[in-house]
Every structure is written in C-alpha cells, then in structure tokens.
Image 1 (tube, rainbow, N blue to C red):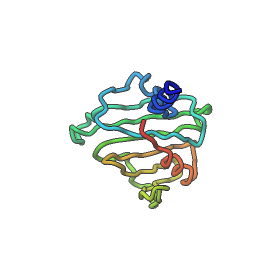
Image 2: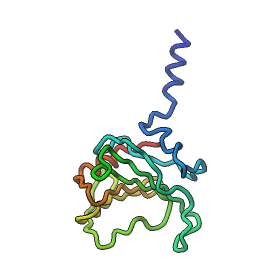
Image 3: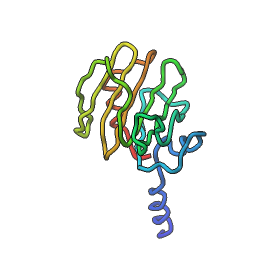
Image 4: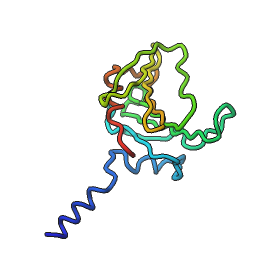
Amino acid sequence: MLLLLLSACVGGTTNSHPYAGELEEEEYYDEEVPFDFKMPTSLPFEAEETFIRKMGIDESEETSPDRYVLIAGFQGNDSEEEHLIVGVQNEGEVEDTQGLTEEQVTLSDGKEAQYFYDESSQVLLWDEADLTYQVSVSTGDEYSVEELIDVADSFETY
C-alpha cells in the first residue's frame, strides 16, 4: 500500500504540460535556456505540429547581448488557417506593432495585456516574471480577442 502511495506521489512530479518533450525534438532547441518559461496548454485548434523558429541569444546589432529569444509555433491540421506563434524573451523590444490598432485587455489573473490588430495580424502581449510573452497570428487566421486571452490564460511552465 505504501509503495502505491509513493508511486502516485512521484508520478505527480513529472512535467504534465501537453507539449512536454515536443520542443526538445526540434533542431533549434537550446538546452541552456537562461530562464524558466511558459507555453500555452490550450489553443483555438488541435495542434498537429510544434516547431521552433528561433531559440537563443538574439545576435542582431540593435539588441542587448543578453537578450534571449524563444519563438515557437503551433500548427493545426489546416496549415493556412490554423497556426499560432508564441514568443518569449527576457528583454528588449518585441514584434513591431507600429501601425496596428491597440487595446488594453485584462487576463483572467488580473494582468494587463496589450492587444494589437489590423486586417492582417493580431498580437497579444504581456509581461510576467521579468519575461515578455506574445501570442500572434497572421493573415488567414482570425481569432477573437477572447480566444487569444484564453490561450494566454492557459500558459503553464513548460
């Protein structure tokens, strides 16, 4: 009986994130991430593929040498209609939102976020634990701001 109880306790400590292990399989995965980050656990579609666009020190000339960026993508069955990009970074500017309409929104935990949009893109942006998170979609995808907030509300430690 004690063995079963211990097994149940140990089993509860494993990473239960629904995408656990998927990013690590990507070519660009960096095991030396300098911070703990979160990823969404819920999307407005069923993810068929998870991929990394960029992961590591941002080497562009305009940024701090300490800026670390993770850009991951989630794609559904219809690659033109179902995809979403998640960005996490420790400092510096995020995706260019110039020219986009901006609204202040509130996540379920009370955090303030900025929602940027136009006819070709949507970006939800917020800060948490010294990191900046963004969820973005582009032409072909159109989700309500409530759906993007639901995605942001679902972020859990990866």
